[in-house]
Image (cartoon, rainbow, N blue to C red; front, side, top):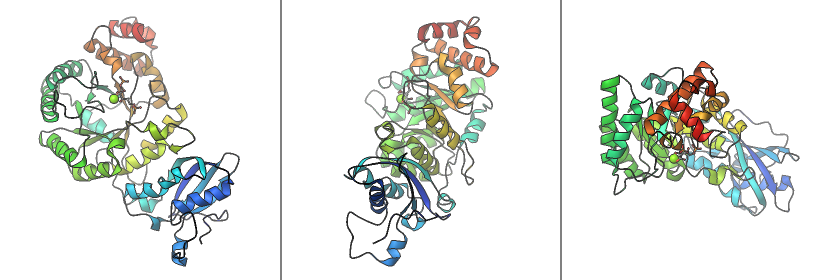
Length: 408
Ligand code: CAP
Ligand code: MG
């Protein structure tokens, strides 16, 4: 039987390294680690007669155990994995192990992916820098919004509103995560109407604004919708990557290669396994695989908004998305959830300027209406970029003043 634990083992350049937080149930952390390495690579709960020397060699090895912090590190030889197959990789390192009785809690904190494995992935065709080029917005954050109410507006209502808010300064609009193709809002009709608005803005104002059409559906339908967007000259599709799954994401990305399509990744549902700090999978790990899979932009949290996440974690994820890795393009982080103009200075202070900042309620809930909401956001961004305190800037700007009065 492979040892699965070798504290003298030095990982090779080709090993994939996983860092886990482990709380064992009634056994030692060393014993528990052994089962984690076994179940996530070649083994099972007992020795098997079919084990062979060569299989022992490709088994995962726990090479570090920090009893105090309850953190272990496991090295997985590359031979355990198929090239660029995210479901297969995650079925190993983030599969059965979370459900074993011998773990009370187990969390995959981080994964360090060897160069050879990275080479199998293409990453985004359209990355952070391409989004900047397409929109021609170089310095400031990109201003985004999500139509609200989440679901219920008709395509015509959306398009009429879109024209107004794009004209008032919004650069990027998106469907909400739960908007599909409904009786009152058919996907195809929505896309045609929204893309007409985009053309009109280009003609009248010379701006390349973006609309992220939510194509989330079973994979076959998703592909049809992505093709529809492409055929009608759309530049961006949105996928709920957690509910659609890694396989669907990889499939759509592959089918879209050559189309220069922005892939906007929404992460609805991620918190069911990322939020508990003792159990599940960290958002950092999700972000790493999302980048490899080829998303162009990814929701990563706001720190100051309505969704839970620590500053340290969100900053780490954003830094990862913007870091240089093996020629794989950078991904644009998206700060969204509970944001309004008053929070803009803090978002930029914490996360920087290289991101999309999305405002749903914080635009559509403006006391003077949606256009005023868009103007207030633009003013808040201006203030932050000029380094002027927002309350100071608001003295001369009615829309911003009203927004601060409403939400601060
Ligand atoms: C934001 C949002 C996004 C959240 C998801 C919403 O709207 O559209 O889905 O940002 O969280 O419906 O809540 P509001 P995250 O601006 O009205 O809150 O980005 O953290 O994945
Ligand atoms: Mg939403």
